[in-house]
Length: 254
Image 1 (spheres, rainbow, N blue to C red):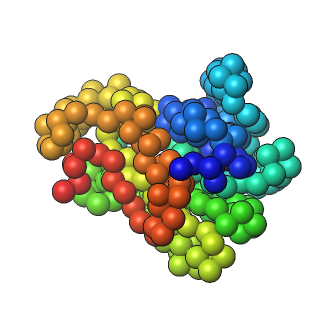
Image 2 (image 1 turned 120 degrees about the vertical axis):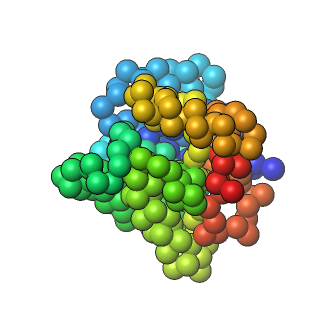
């Protein structure tokens, strides 16, 4: 089932984060090589790289900043050279945001978040598309289920991710003729990554409690829930799926 993914590598942007690390592990488990970046958290990245190597996985770790296109180009060039092809690119990155009402959000803070998330993602796809054309590969971007049902006080997450989703739809439309599929995973409240960070804020904890009460499955999600959805989009099981957004939020968006 995963033969195509065993030939080449997945590039996971944000591999040192809670969700990115689990996505990297999931690709490694099915026999794919993994190339992942880190921005500043070198200790986490080194720990993940050692874990993957100990498990017998083929892995490449590099520092790369989405604000620095040359560093992204270097990561992709090394990944393709070492593993021959890049079959999947996963955007599992994004700045840590705080909860805030729109009226209380300073314009400069909003601009910083948009630059990091939206412009950073654009820089990534600018570099990634030629590699994915060669492999006729797949792009999967983590978004938020909040773009389907507005999450109170969470516009700093949902607003920029709406732009990410539109870029993904554009790529699906424009690059389908080149064999590229592009999809999004809408992340709900997850016990990993930013989901845990938000709960450290008293208001965020209260918000998470309200979200949990309104979630039909009555539980928070796991990093594995997100990684499995990413793997589905990357795999032959989704070979005729492009331009979609799959919410992994326990039904909370309905």
